[in-house]
Length: 226
Image (cartoon, rainbow, N blue to C red):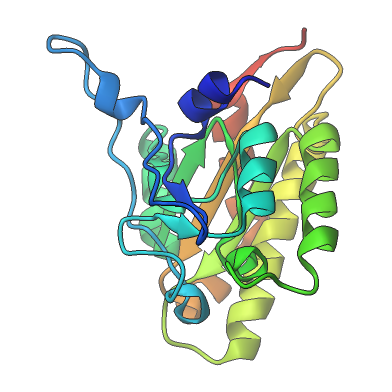
């Protein structure tokens, strides 16, 4: 992939510790006057353990190898580039009932908790994680992330996240999708649900959650298979 093309698609800021800071062009910055504004982005989530090499503006300090990998596979490390996913009143009510924020990107986005594998000093599991992400770009058009931001025990957060993520996958499979692919359509990109109150979300139906999200993704993000 040509460097210019990769830089256009990445829409993020990455720099290697051995290089001067490099700011790659953002498509949002290239908008001309008179064109519709981009949908609002969401609040960036930078876990505490990666804040020393992920800056407040989303710039990732990483190794040259990681940088080239992200560019070559067109993977976005900055979750703050995702846009709020507000697909109609049904999803809006769901977000209110479960106290959840939804976001979507047509690009594949690094999971916030996987950013630690891209640290600038090099991580012992970096090669394994790069291989996993490379495989996912080929085999899974749709990536689904569910994280928690509210105060609750680690057990409650983890169980609630897994429960809601499973419900989304199950509902999509019932509609004929597997990893974002159906016989006639595909959903490509990254869907992200942030749970702000895991205890509240845990009291509601996971099935209802999964079906509503799956229906919204199918209606708003699917396209015919090539």
